[in-house]
Image 1 (tube, rainbow, N blue to C red):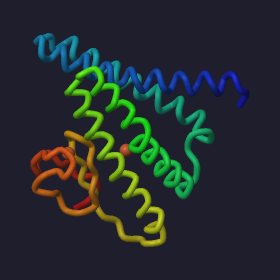
Image 2 (cartoon, rainbow, N blue to C red; image 1 turned 90 degrees about the horizontal axis):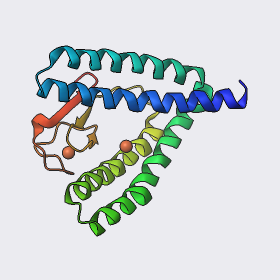
Image 3 (spheres, protein in one colour; image 1 turned 30 degrees about the vertical axis):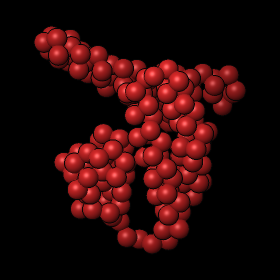
Image 4 (cartoon, rainbow, N blue to C red; image 1 turned 120 degrees about the vertical axis):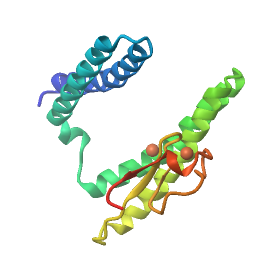
Amino acid sequence: MKEKTKENIYKAFIGEAKAYFRLLAYARKAEEEDVPQIALLFRAIADAERVHATRQLNLVKDLVVKDTDTNLELSFQREKSVSENIYPDFIKDAEDEGEAAAVLAFTHARDAESFHAKLYDRAIYQMIKKVVKAYQVCQVCGYVTDKKKPAKCPVCGAPEESFKTIGEE
Ligand SMILES: [Fe+2]
Ligand SMILES: [Fe+2]
């Protein structure tokens, strides 16, 4: 594929992916304001933007999606970089501006990301094993574990009920 088109498809993908989350937030707002038809409209169009994002990503997937070995390695590097560089800077700025909620959200994200990095790091060596086991994802902070649901999330302290299971238990 030619350069300019490839670049535009990637930009379009980012735009559609953001729109997906923004429209779901609009839908929740419309539900709060008790306008269910508008909430459904936002949900329907969010779903349509998801279709666009998926289709566009598919067109440039050679650019974005590599073999699983490489995807694991890249994901590990990204998690390391966000938890060691990006979030610490964001936390500092939020502290300087006295934005407590942002400090907490960024701190939870930083800590959760470093656990994500550990899971990727271990998975790189687990590739050869054929055992499939479920993961538990904290819906408050994004902490992930391949162990049982903890009674309390080690990152944010949320209770066991805050965990969602990905895979078969
Ligand atoms: Fe992560
Ligand atoms: Fe958590």
